[in-house]
Length: 126
Ligand SMILES: C[S@@+](CC[C@H](N)C(=O)[O-])C[C@H]1O[C@@H](n2cnc3c(N)ncnc32)[C@H](O)[C@@H]1O
Image (cartoon, rainbow, N blue to C red; front, side, top):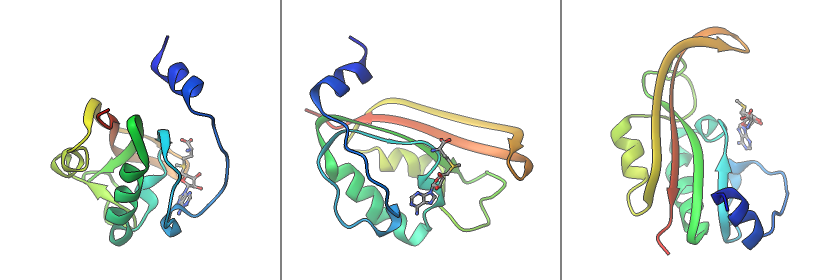
């Protein structure tokens, strides 16, 4: 059975809508997925949010996130832009299943830009 299907079978999905920068608690979760949202959190609040996400993972649970890199064209603006070493540090204590890094010129809603992206999929050890 594919990993995502297995997670969905074992743990039900609960939906809510929040400002993730203001989160103080999270329910324990088998899957934490964030597509291109975490980079919009201010750098000052990012470590606490990351700790919250990792702490919410059940043993064997999977974290799948997009992060922006420090060479992204938007990196001088607000948000969190990370070096590869910082991303690897974030994943320490987890089993890294996949860490992809991409850098290219391509479209954004605001027009063309230089993208520097990390996609991290990591599992809390059982
Ligand atoms: C680039 S879009 C990505 C949208 C979608 N996840 C996707 O992959 O296509 C960034 C998303 O981050 C969300 N976002 C930014 N800051 C947020 C915050 N503080 N709390 C919750 N969501 C936030 C925005 O609402 C937006 O939906």
